[in-house]
Length: 162
Image (cartoon, rainbow, N blue to C red; front, side, top):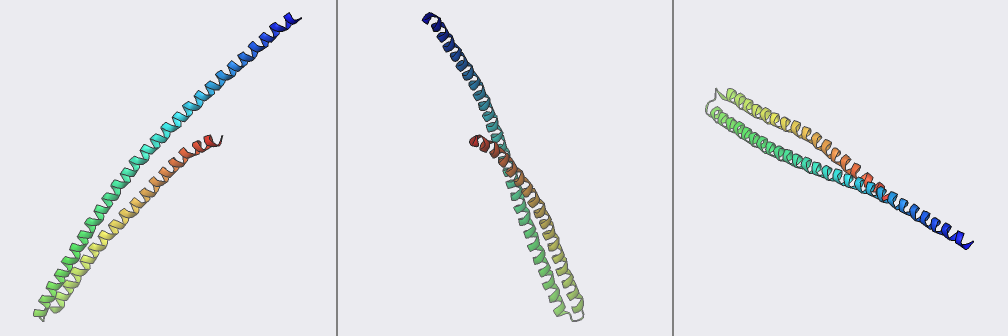
């Protein structure tokens, strides 16, 4: 009877070894799939990072342009105010030396000041409009970057939790 039990023992051992080998093969295939998924997520994160860097560069350029536009508008405003003041001073001098022309000179001075103020207001309104536009663009791009960053972090958190 012992001769009959030994073949069954070897057959059982071979069956268990076969099941272990199949289990290991399945495990290796699953690990390879996980590795491929991790590589794909890493590539997506790299691309998102590059896109965020490009958008940051674009925003930086727009901010530099805005600063330049503000500087130009400020210079024009200073020039307009100085010109208006100079015209007003000249007209006041003329008015002082000419009694009959006093009222006309004052009106011209006032008109020059009003024109300079209107020009300055126009420059300020243009800057305000541009700042509002850029603010909206900045907010939209930052929201996109935050959304991309949060979508990249969520799958990584799921892997750590499992």
